[in-house]
Image 1 (cartoon, rainbow, N blue to C red):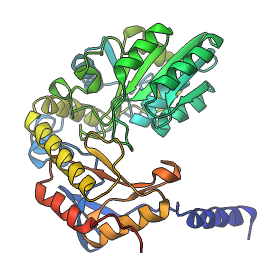
Image 2: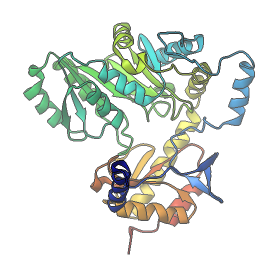
Image 3: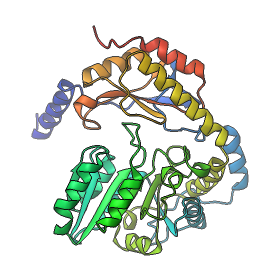
Image 4: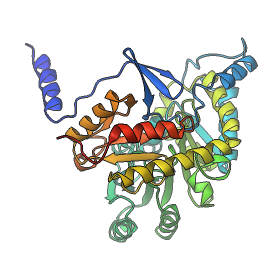
Length: 390
């Protein structure tokens, strides 16, 4: 065997030994279900929180508007010839919705996060970040070679201590958090973060990836709900979850947008989001604003689910919205529980390192407005009491 064949074989073996080996699942989505192999199972792993991604009525209505009158691909970087009226319209709609001066859209939420942090490369900028923030935020910090200070999850006392100790060492500083944490399912103390950012002269960044469309006025997110949109400098969202599309959305000031356009390598060197996706984003943004009934139903379902899981003795952490982790404490137990659910007609993959630390391994339940209480009852009957592996 060549060195690289040996290397890849060893890597695969080590992953399997640590219960961290992953494979892409061949699936076909069908409403709140997916078809995997010959089985149709309830999908409790979807981020299509409002059921927009596959809504046939909306898709038909949207396509009628653009029949034979739109480009399917942008075919170039935004700064070359990849711009489009549809992309500019989506940015204007998002900025207006979030109540910021302007917006910028990149191909994905991952692109948006790495773009922002990497743009500060070689500027003596440090970042204070919640330990539970998404990998894309950390990857942006690495790409920008920024000095990183991590504070324990949602621990404002430790954030303050870090600011007191390290802020003065650097010319520029950023405080970054998710609004709704993607694995923990709990929310950030945005008010406290905005106050600390002002006090210590930091740029504040909040990622609303999992909260946009779900809460706040007309679904505009947690920052708008807490009326802090003017205090937070950069608000990030994604088109790939509740909005049922794709793209990474950045709401900010005109000066920040100009800075990102000129400094963001992922923006400069990536093909722009396609006009058809940008148009669909505009369409779904308008639909989401009017989906208050779906939001109320979703809230009722997540409260009911969490209550029942806790009654059965399961650890759901501090989850307070539609993301509910069933924390098992080990990769092995998370895999066992996930397989148990699969055998009972429910799809919810195990979440393991490096996504979370080993002790936070879990089965992540994702509630959507497509579900009914009967689906939750199926989950509760399938999961049983707090016994993972005998």
